[in-house]
Length: 126
Image (cartoon, rainbow, N blue to C red):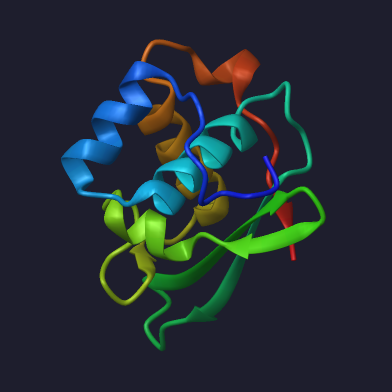
């Protein structure tokens, strides 16, 4: 999957989600990479980090990247498209692991029929 611009076979619900969001081919394929990266059988492909914390401490700006072949691709804009992050790229909340919250919401959207306890991949920080 080195070239994300080519058409690849993706699951039906990923196709439907990409169609609902109006994603182009590259973005749909990157969504499929995220689909694989949040699942436990594809470890060490999802990278998340807290970029900044607000003055009040009630929100954090999050960055997301995935590994595709030998490349690292920023996928933060897809988290905004999926409404996991707001338009500024931040998530509200404190007192918990907000990176887990982002990876959990991503898993919940991309794997709607699976339970996260045994299937969620551990994100890596960068």
